[in-house]
Each structure stands twice: as structure tokens, then as C-alpha cells.
Picture: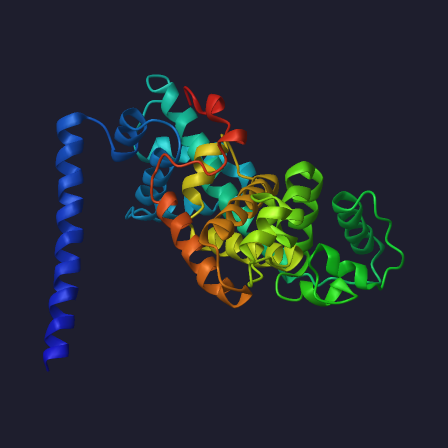
Length: 326
């Protein structure tokens, strides 16, 4: 009985708040002469803060046309903006900047949804050793990370040198499919120097901070390195979860002036890979068995950062200048 009463009170409170909110919006519109979309665009600076408010406003609207506007095809965005302006009785000649601002927001919102679909497609595609393109990408990964060490054979224990578990890497891509390979290759190719350094440090993490003499003097009896490629696939999973949960909206809406793309996602992976490496060194775990604990702690730190509406994880590629005056 108590459970029923609690549920009843919660339902009543929900409908009360919902009706109260709609009444408040109506009163504010009458007082300001502006709809909620206008107030957001005029009073909130471009970026995640504005786009997320626009997204929430459209999804929470009582109008089905506004609710579905966040799910339109990119080619239909311009027509959708015209429909919104007409529905809200806003004269585009008097408010020309509003249409531009709404279009920028919708491009980000729709683009984020499409990015999830693109990433999911790669994740679901398994690595196929009979596919020449897949094999070419895998060999490119080796060449980028170990340019001075030729691979003696496709099936080789050498793969362990870059952090795979056995002599054939294809079995390690099962969890993340081609997405894991795409990210690793992008990191090795786009940020080669850092990728090679992270690989070296992952094999001998203490050597990156201490000389060999200091290492031997301290007599470390624990191994705190990790498998570069396996961790890269694991960080791909972390980035994927941040994406599908919506946590990365803050970052992408701040760095992508229009639709976020797969390149934005891969650049974010590079950042996460580099930051996780530094985090691992700072945590100084006893052994590799602590990996899940360190990963979870790192994941929570990234989530906290993304709660800041002005957060951009990778400022070195943030398109902040392109966000101005939208």
C-alpha cells in the first residue's frame, strides 16, 4: 500500500510540475514577446550550453512537429527550420539570426545521432582476415608503430610487441569490431610520435621517468606496464559508451561547429588514450589486475569533466573560432 501511495504521489507531482512548467513558459512568452527557442538563442552563447537547451526544448515540446525535428535527415534541416519559424509565428525577416542559430544547433543534434549510427556500424562489423582492406589497415598499424622493425610474417609473435595477445590480432577485435582497429590506426597515423611514445612507455613505464640505474637501485618488484593494443581497444569501448550515453555531447557540441564526424570521435579517442596512459602512470597500480579499477576511476573523471557545459576534451582541435557569431 505504501509503495502504491508513493507511486501515486510521484505521478501527481510529475503532472503538476509539467503543467506548471507549461504555464510558466506561456507567461514568460507573453511578458517577453519571445518563445523559448528565441530566449535560448539570444541569451545563451554558442556551443554545448545552447545546443543542449535547444535539444531539450524541442524534445519536450507538446508539438509533434517540434519533437520530431531532432530526428530529421540532414538535407531536411533547412526546411525544418522554416517549419519551426512558421509554427512559432516568427518572422524570419525580423529575426534572421535566429534561423542561422537554430540551423547550427540542429546540424549538431542530428549529426550526433548519425555519428552514433556510423560508430555502431563499425563496431558491429567483425574483422575479416579475408578482406584485403582489413588486412591493409592492420599492416599499416604495425608500420606506423614499428617503422624500423619489419613484420616477418602475418601470423607472428611480433604482434605481442605492440600489445596484442597472440600471434594473430584478428581475435582481439571481437569486442569492438573494426571500430577498435580504426581508432588504433588513426592514433598511430595521425599522432605518430605520441602513439610510439605511449607504446614504449607502456612496455617500460618506469623508464619514462627514471634512468636504468635509478630503476635498478629502487629494485621494483612489480610490473605496471600494459598491452598497448588491448588497452586501445578497451579505451575504444570507453569512448563508445561515452558517445551512446550522450555524455560526449558536451564535448562535440563545443568543438564541432556543425555535425560531429567520425574524425571528431577518433580525435577524442587519441586524447583519451594519451590521458589514460598518464593516469595509469600516476595511479601506479600494483599489477595489471588493477586495470579495471583504474579504468573505472578514469571513466568517472572524464564524466565529471563532461558535466561542465563549456568542456572541450581536446582543445588542440577545438573549432572555437568557427562557433563565434552563429
